[in-house]
Image 1 (tube, one colour):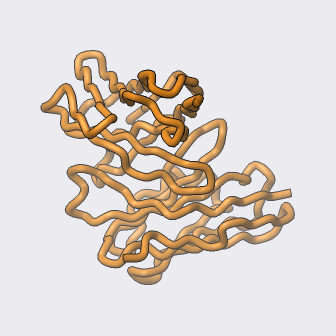
Image 2: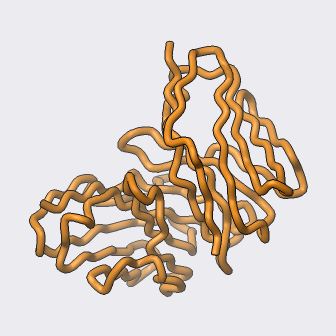
Length: 112
Length: 116
């Protein structure tokens, strides 16, 4: 059974600095991991993913790191912007349909 | 293209009443998922369908919850009778089967349910 943990419910960062969000998972059977972003009153939207054969994937200001031996993901945002303020969920597939199991989310607040 | 459409966006009801939430997935998507978001449990999967057939409903909390997908463009999640602890945001999401490798889901805007 897949468990996904985001141990920091909230994070505040100054604009321009780096934001680091962390995620731990239990079952490493699957070959990709994802991050979603959610603004208030909207549904989550896909942000970035990483294949298990990589340890880093970069897309603009967003970089996801994967440490398979530690079963740990992290999302780096640099430089952070006020518009990045949102809830970030990590997601790991499980089951026959690769249905996603989500972490509990981290509320990121970027202060101007 | 239209995204996943959910209705109602907000529902306030009294304990014991029946609640029906609706979802129209993205055309061509053959997987549909119902999730619930609460402060305590985050985003939890309730049930999912493949080609309109319910595959896994192990996340449905109780028999008070039921879901149907009568055709490829419509699904409902029903709670009868509703209780205050059902208050949450309910999300519908869909994806194509061949996107299983990357797992990207497309979510609706959610239905915020408040049971008094």
